[in-house]
Amino acid sequence: MKEKVLLDASVVTRCRRRVHLENDPAMQDQPPAPLDLGIEQRIADAAEHRRAVAKLLSRLHGPDWTEIPRGAARDRAELTLAAMRAGTRYISAAQLPSDEVSGRRGTVDLLVRSGDGYVPVLVVRHKITDPGRGAQVSPVERPVPEAASTDQTRKVRAQPRDQLRLAHAVRLLQACGMSAAGNRGGVIGVEADVVVWHDLANPNWPGGRTALTEYEVRFADRLAVATAANEGAEPLAEPSRINECKGCPWWPVCEQQLRDRRDVSLVVRGEDATALRDLGVSTVDELAAVPLERADELPLTGVRNTDAILLAKAWLQDLPLVRRVSDVSVPRADVEVDVDMESYGDSGAYLWGCWLSGADIGDEPGYRAFVSWEPLPSDDEGRSFAEFWTWFCSVRRRAYERGLSFRAYCYNELAENRWMLASAERFAGKPGVPSVAEVREFIRSAEWVDLFASVREQFLCPNGKGLKVIAPSAGFGWRDAEASGENSMRWYRDAVGLGGTVPVLSQRDRILRYNEDDVRATWTIRRWMTSEAVREIPFAEDL
Image 1 (cartoon, rainbow, N blue to C red):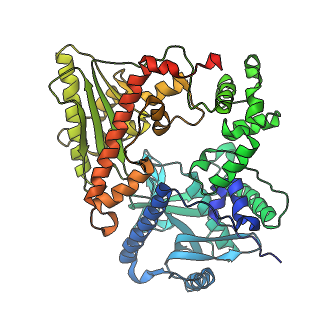
Image 2 (image 1 turned 120 degrees about the horizontal axis):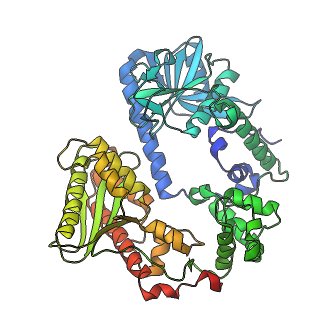
Image 3 (image 1 turned 135 degrees about the vertical axis):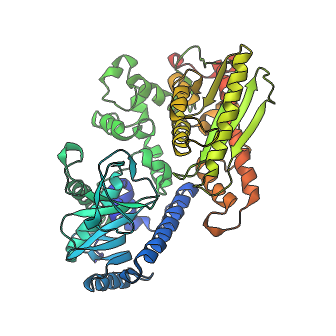
């Protein structure tokens, strides 16, 4: 007889097909691929953050604090239950008793005594509030819901996954009879200064649902998927490509199945693929065969209807790029600067790399980096940003003084814009740091050009629009075979000695070389897009 399926909180935000594969006995001989190095690093960073917060709280709360030691899950659950029955005020690294009736199992970073029971608290390595008003918080010195008050300087940042994890923990606490009244749960974020408290029974989710209601619906679905897989029944979840696939260790398994089927989700993702299947268009071939004059009949929302058909045609011909327009263009200037920023998660932006090209204004053309090698977060980050902005503005000023036009370029402005604005706000008043208004004025101007937007508007890209996907078509390649944003975060940890290790200076050189290649890539793409060579890319009307 097969063991009963027990699922943890992660399943409610996980792809249904992944839940199937993880619970299918037939897949145990085909283990998933290793985790992406970037994801693996984020998991390690989160674990390190939890340890650091646990040490802080243990110092603050002394004898009221206990931590459940490592060991077998069953033994840890017994120790956790014993600590709760003894009324221990704070229980760290808790293993909640499994609820075999409902199919639940799980851990929680912190249990806090409240009234006659316990409330769960998560420790996460992301931001949990934004500037605003209305968040219910208590200081970490008093991480209990009774100490919560409304903070008029903070509003809750939307983190649905946190609330769903808390709902799972609440249900486990209720199953073992140790839940406090009120259906509340807390979260300690990356800054570890307050606990944000969530009312999980508050109907503030779409459609007037509560976090608990949303959780129950999702969990029941995933439990049905897992149970069917475990029992060898007809699968309740078939593979379909979604955004989550990129970092999933099961993607190689699903990708092969999708390619064997020539599944339409290889071209359009998510709900659009589902809508097409419902219409009887299940393969790339069937989508490519839809006449363009009937494109309006397709029920698509994530991509233009005609684009979907053309993407399918391009995919069948193995074309990495197709021109939407006859004449490709990019705004150019006499003096040009390509900008690429490197950040480490939510901790900060430690490197601003620039490539100067165009007319002579007295500066040597080529690469220059404005960097801080002090582990983030650090005030030295403000110094490097100020040096970047000062140099950047001096280039603009000298271009104007010589009667020359100026433009700066990046690839997908969201990251650069975020950290320019955040740096201006965080380091306001420091020498060389611009005001938020000054930064905002620049990023709204015609002098700030997002090449990603130009690519998106003028090309169809069956394999994606990322810099490292597009640049090879322009003839550019990275010198480092492992170059990626995810890997650069791992290199950064080594470069600055995060976790108490000795800094590896060679990794600093590696990061700078990688950053230089990124700005050279945008420079190369821009020149290629404004050259005759771009006409070698097939034109959509000719497909």
